[in-house]
Figure 1 (tube, rainbow, N blue to C red):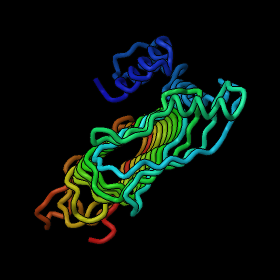
Figure 2: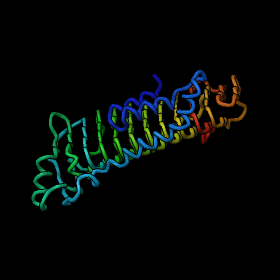
Figure 3: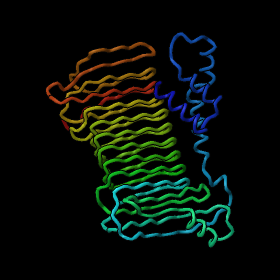
Figure 4: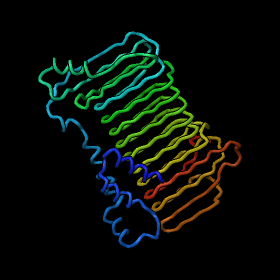
Length: 344
């Protein structure tokens, strides 16, 4: 099962699109010259962009401010007693999360809170106190705000050290992290951008349904980024990087010579990759309706297919280097561009 079909099935499962809409969206991404004229007309009438746009609008319109009406808002600050922990789990049903590190040995959270369907601030604060969990227990820092009727925009400060596992799941709000070190990151928001800077570790998995993913100055062995609607921008040193979008461009800027593998795929959008330094390159570039650009000096063409609806370029470059970097980049309606390293 290809990636586009999997994403659409997940959208149906989560209720983002109806079963009927999902069926038409699946039909729109089906390939093959053996489809009948009726199917072709269906594609024209119910194209990928049309149904993807509808699905994205449903995600965008899930702002609970519009659903729950009046609210009471206040600011809240909590400091936890110093305690050792190596894992962190953040879950917010409605609201945003910013995570920073600092030199102090305790955790602090400052929150701007909106509580819906309450009469006054006293009732709002009591509901916030009853529903929100913020504690350190069994080597785990947990922040949980499960109610959609409490919108919590949290700024979190963690002791500056190396962690083992950092996990977050947001339903409706942006996610930002800066300066964290952890062996593993698993970060997801259903509606909102994901922004990381100056983070490092072994693995990093980033996902959003509607929003851009931006990772700046990252250092990871493995980096995965996945969005339905939004651009993906990766900058840093990643041994293996894998970026996938349905509607949005992908830009990857490698630094140093750490990288050995890159897989980049989008349905509607362009792919631009700046290569790592001091690497022998072998690449496969594909597009259906766009163009392929390899801006490297003296690269060797292994296969160059220029059919109207199917373009392919296989190439090698910089054979003077021993260690290799393998790249596969693909888009259906945009262009693919491979640029030389910033310094070679």
